Length: 334
Image (tube, rainbow, N blue to C red):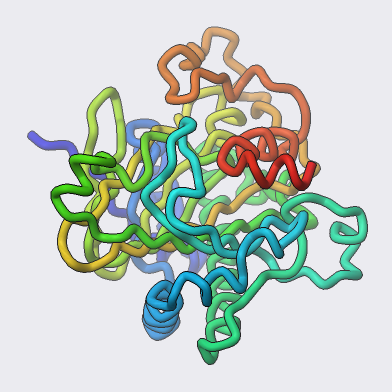
């Protein structure tokens, strides 16, 4: 029987009804066995989703010179803006995608900006797509609120107080929002470049909340097997990142995933928000889960690095990872 990623209705969690403990149990099984799950009942306005997708497609349909007016080279230490096809690397190889890096909108007088903290600051927005800025900022706000609720459910799934994870997010979680566009490839392009829009990788933070379009292409590796994660109307895909793997001592694994490029005439677009810890937080194993017998999966990981062995803050871990994605930007910034 083909394995499929679980679908969890999280409405009891959002409504704080007794059934939230059933939701938590479903999360526990999904995080242990897959590292991924779909959510329904998330409460995000479908009109906001529609606006986000339509306005994003407008942006990516612009000529390259128009898109480059908000290039990442203008984003400074905030690491925000547009990058063109092939500029982002996975395992040292160019991805077949373009995108926009976004995050919480912080003013120049915000303490983290004043301190020149990397990955914090203002966003860059196109001027010729009415309402796009407002849509993006509303999306980041709503999905960040959803992220807090989901982390309460994950805390319950570990038999912890539902506010347990607030300590690593407060006072400022790091919501990093990306809009990725995967151009459709013809047969010759697939033969030349391969079929992967982005190769096997894991996410760095705690939890990723992904809105897909209708094309599909996401694949998840679980227990050594690649599983399709097709779009399901009304759902988001959630997956755990390296830091949740770390705090649970490997009980919840940050399983690899990859994206196959579309081969029809329509580009694939996706909207992941990475709900990450505070930049300066130290993310340590949950004491009650501190199992010295846990088997580190360093040898089998895509990047051959351990999420359990590093020392330092989440910011240290993140900068090390992101600087490998954009090595040229690292040289200019750090």
